[in-house]
Amino acid sequence: MIFRATQKMASKLRIACSAITDGYPTMVEWYCNVVVLRRRQFFLFTHAPSLFSLWTPAAGLHRDGFGAMFRRGAIDTLSDYGFSNGDAARIIDDGPDVFAKAVDRRVIGSMVDYAKMLRHAVEYEGGFEHLASRAMNDIANECPMSAIGMESPVDYLRQLLRAETPHNIAVHQTGARVARSGR
Image (spheres, rainbow, N blue to C red):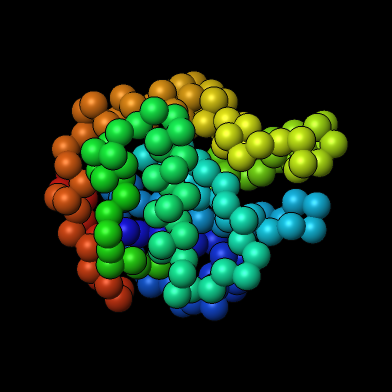
């Protein structure tokens, strides 16, 4: 799994990001950021090819439990949207986990938009108590995004999963080496 971490994320987990570069995002590439809303920290994970996203609480988490926490949250969220275990296996692998620098401005810009939309929704609803986790994820996943041709991320992910080859074609290498998607 390739986690593309923002500077905030790398600081929170106290990790050094490797310099993995690739022309195209792989199916197992997720961007991650830390977003503070009403003095609470959340991780925002965004699937690089589809912009499908999920929010998880970030309080008290350290690097050792990060991969397991992400996989639990991602599989639960995908299941909540009607994706099968086979679909989840194509975009979430068992590792090894590699942390790399966030490089795709299209994904980073979408994440900034998602954070702004969630801030607005939290203020509109009067706090997190009135906003369920599915509603938090819907803010990102049901919104049409220009980076994916004005499709919603959940619909675009379904299209990708119908067309994409299995994720295990991707070759993951740690360090400063290149991760290749096989495209």
